[in-house]
Length: 237
Image 1 (cartoon, rainbow, N blue to C red):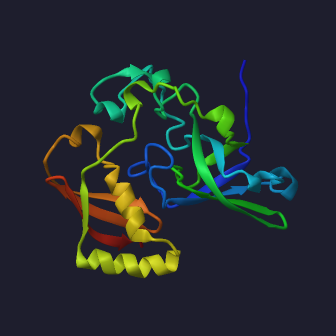
Image 2: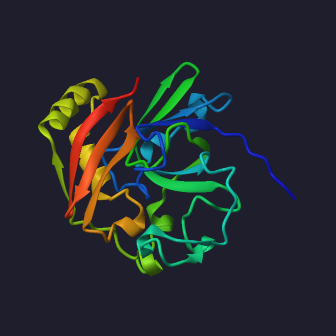
């Protein structure tokens, strides 16, 4: 038996590629996103009373890896990328059905004629992600005080310090005004999650220049001795 689903909406976010996107929601609190509903779901009635919930579950499609083969065993980043676990004991995007879920904060709902947009915060969703469903977060049912989480029992921690060159600082200030966000804080929160491949996180010397797409620019940085230095923000042409 097979099932087919139609997206109810599409995500607009600062993340343009998998590299650099947080591995879980709410780790980068400055990350904002918009969920734009599509017709026939883009009507005020479909979100009535939703604004009274502070957090939402977003059910979505891993659209960038949807055509990749699923894997029965995967290497979770929390285990250093070297130890394998079963795919169902992970949140890997390489699943039998490329479906993900994300817990985000709801800032507000914008409703204008046939346009309904949910403004989200703390998102870990790629730009253009198709959304299958929205469910309100219920603290009494969705939070379990005594739950166990195996190898991911605690919030990831980092001792990495983030520096900015003078050029990068100036570029952040210029772009922050246009984007109306605290861009420097957003970049710090993203890089403190150390988006490099997991096997790299143990290396103390890594002179490679890394780049990730953020909004409409490429963010360039280097890692050296537990310090990351943001070099520049390169506009796309």
